[in-house]
Amino acid sequence: MRNFYVLLLVSLLVSEGHAAEGPYRMRAFVGDKVVQNTGTIPDDPSGEDPSEDDVTPPVVVSLLPPDDASDVWKTTGLVVEFDEDVVSGSGNIVISNDDASLFESIPVSDARVSISGRDANILPSTLFVEGNTYHVTFAPGVFTDTAGNPHAGLTDGADWNFTIAATPVPLQNVVGTNGAVDWEVFTAGGQTWMLVSNNGAYPGSYISSPLFRFAPENPDASKVVFVEDVMTSGSYGWASAQLGSETYIFGSFHNDGDYNTQSPLYRFVPGNPDGSKMQLVETLTTSGPVYPTLFNVDGELYVLVPNYAGSLYGIPSWLLRVVPGNPEGSRFQHMQNISTQDARGFEVFVADGETYVVVGDSSASSRLYRFVPENPDSSKLVLIQTIPSSWALRWHHFEVEGEHYLAVANFKSTANIFRFSSTASPMVSPTPMQSIPLTETADWDSFTYGGTTYLVLAQATSGISYLYRFVPGNPDASKLLQIQTFETNFANDWAPFVAGGNTYLAVANRGAFYGDASLSQVFRFYP
Image 1: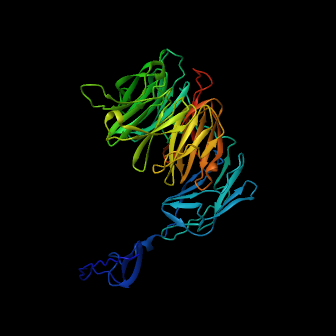
Image 2: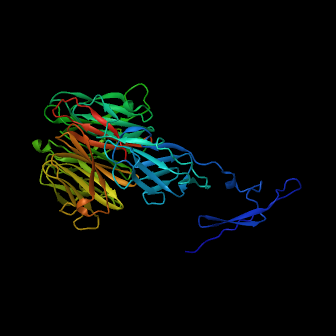
Image 3: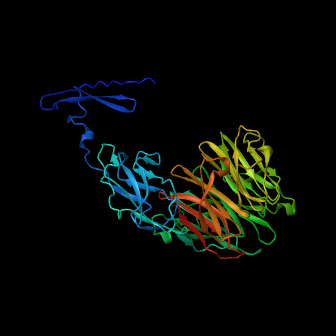
């Protein structure tokens, strides 16, 4: 590779009494490195190298898990945050058991130690043990600042210790959920908001679904702050999306006695000081819809409405364009019918610059479409292929190292992972890449922390949910490794989100019976 040199000529007007004494230095930049030579041009009027002024070592400002934490997950990694950018020095990060025996020693030069600015991330090679206490130490000079000043180290085992919980402990039990089936977490006005879908009402009755604000600065037991109630009718999913600077929310109202429901579109006004933050725009006559999808393509807003009860009335699912500012007609413009049977929700994703949609229902197969916005309205969704499934409740797309995957929660068979490729034929292999031997699953979701992808799986008719680590280097049949279980109550939905620099997982617990006022929960994720 050719190196490029830039010579900067600086004219110095030197008069008596204003000249800085030498020797002076000249700097040449070679790539991103600095080469210093003696010469006649000073670095600054004082004639001193600014880097020579930095003699202050870095200081630790936070630890994750926090010192003395007692609710840590066995999957946790370690994060040290300093008050300035750091680089690796020499030595090891030592993790000890409570009896002072060695758990693991990780060289700071190891690939499991990654440094990004002020943060040093350390990933142990094995999981911690439930119920055990651990101590982390490292010697002076293991980390230095960019000027070479060594950190003093954490040399006392009492400086950083934590205990692994037997099972993940909820950060907060959320009061006000009743037969919850969905969380919609979104940001607006610089804050994080949480809408729960309370489906716990018996047919024909109405029940509110609360809006909360997530306040990461609050104590753990009060981070989820009630804002207002939204009156709903068998709420079965919210979907939010941005259009310009505005946030819009569509709700699936599933059941008011005969499934002929009015499902609403709201504009969210986070700064409204006197009234509701949920401003009704228009309602849409629907047929028992569940889990809608609101999405934006090329500045146009669309909603996919899965009419679950449409098979009872000969009503298909729909693709609609949403035009919130339409002054004269409906904000909903019908575009395309989608043939479904007890549809349970759409997943929209982008791969290789194209937008795709996958939908599952109670039939023996799910359908994959390509969304072509330039096509006529009645044919924007182009069927690509069918995918074997069995009462597919939810599909979820995720991407790891440039590869695309689709996870399906089948109610009547195993939960499966498929590889997706826009250049393959078929795009989705009819054979799953990996099957999870669980039935009656309701939802997959994924998130990334520290470069690692995790998936969480809700089981709709049990008291357990599952957390997996995705390992792309493993053989296909074992890329998902189960690393944690949660005690849940007929979980229907998981929603990972990031707030205040931490990762959280919200679970919607439906409970064993309709109308069960079971508490939904929020967990802090310890990677």
